[in-house]
Length: 299
Image (cartoon, rainbow, N blue to C red):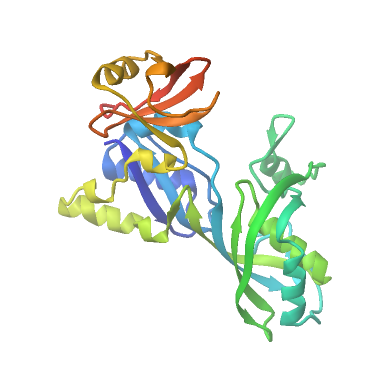
């Protein structure tokens, strides 16, 4: 089985746990997810199977979408509701105050990764240091908040829900913590759903329960298995001749003068046969189109 299954991850399971369950359901040994979701988070988790796993290191950066809920008036060590409470404050802000402060976080911002994260400092994961009660200096990273919208609120209970469209590497927990700090009362994330990732959204997803039912009923997974090339829609598409297809599939570089496409130096492209079959990824290097990865459906 080669391709992608988009899972709508449920709460209280790790991304690795989802992959482990899928290996058991599909009986496919080669499987891996494309980006970690915290156990408390739900939503879009693309999982690659078989020969598709060979493309994991070549996935293009893509924007992520989230719907998050937060509560004002408290903070925790993990920046979400699962952590130990570190402060509690009276809340004297209005919904207009929240909207005004949110505007300050749209665009390119500096964000400090939370201690409870998979980032590494000197080769050690931050969450390992945090579990030992240690706090270390972290360098701020540039991230981009492309859209930030307030979609629901309960001003009496100080609970707010936002939709976020952001660049890869953005921590929504940190964004909410920073909004709380700017409001002067603190804030903690209480719920998180990833609504978009790698070009997929919730409409592309199935649950683990649905996949288990498919296995039990003998339906199989063909109609929920997504072709790997969909992840590379942002790249230019190159179609080659039968002879070029054979050469490329066998790992041979192609002469750019015989490739009917305008590809810049070092640019990555998708390569298709004359029958529109996805062969793999290529990259222009000098006067040749070199092979980056070949799709093998036999893996």
